[in-house]
Image (tube, rainbow, N blue to C red; front, side, top):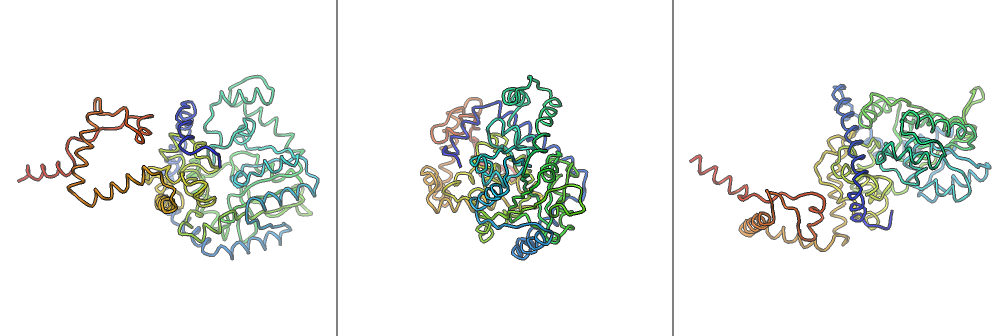
Length: 468
């Protein structure tokens, strides 16, 4: 997690209109795509219910399905390593690379590898690491972090991408999207063919066969997992599911929720390494099953967060994410899912601000393909942060004042009259342009509506009198 505070990162984001505009446009495009896909699939709600039941059942029996998955990976000639944290996971991959003489690694898109900062660990050993997903490749060249779970380069315009390619790859400047794709393809092709190790994540891990499933819209995932002689998959332990029938259900809700597609362009199922009769494929297949705080989450009241299938729908629909973008969260997981999973995985001392990055409008739960009750978990984490003494003093005082006023109707009505009078005195044409600290955080970036002259109770009483 970065050293800056969430508030500092938010201010920096809001002072960069180019980024906020790009994020808002990208999110709007994905929101519209999901809406069209859902409208064209009348069974969506039924599949969401089934998907939730699958995730609930699996996590209730996670030890059994993880053991079944690991046994089947090994039966297919693969190797399984159980990593309790990021250090164990990265150490395993580093040692494997050292023992096999690996000098070049190519990677398919993987949030788990971002979570454990695997690239930095391998590069510290002198190993060349190249991201092959186009968005991740651009981010790597720009020396930045992803800003979205499925669209890591959402915050950039094509003109910025053109400048990055021109500067980092030494190619003539062009902002034509097709030409930029061709440049990336030509650069990556040699890397695919000369890499010693391919590293991927997994969208799902199927217990009954020991298979992993990768869902992508580019062919890079298949190159990464077949061309190099060693394939390593970093898999969060919550990604396991019981059967291929369950996989079919989850794939139906994943693509529609993520990008508005019926099915992603490439859905690859990988079961072990190359067999003697196979014409191609890796010689070795390794699966690193990553805990890194997931067991702790599973044992908590917030275990439901492990249902998440990383579609990104909650980010796209979140008004906070749309306004500030992903980097402001300071975590590899931004948006509502990040506001929940980051403090669960890394602790409230590290990410205690993030549960407050929400309006609690409930849109995230409304669009979640597995119906995770994100608002409830956000409130749980806010309460836990308050009990731990992490709340700012002004907020504590404000909540205590509200609690006293809410318990005394006369005091509450008096306070509402003062708020109405005060905001109307500060307002111009019904809007307040400047509030004093700490409320200035609102009016620094948008106007605040003045309180109504008459409260709801006053208007209701007048309505009753008029009816009599």
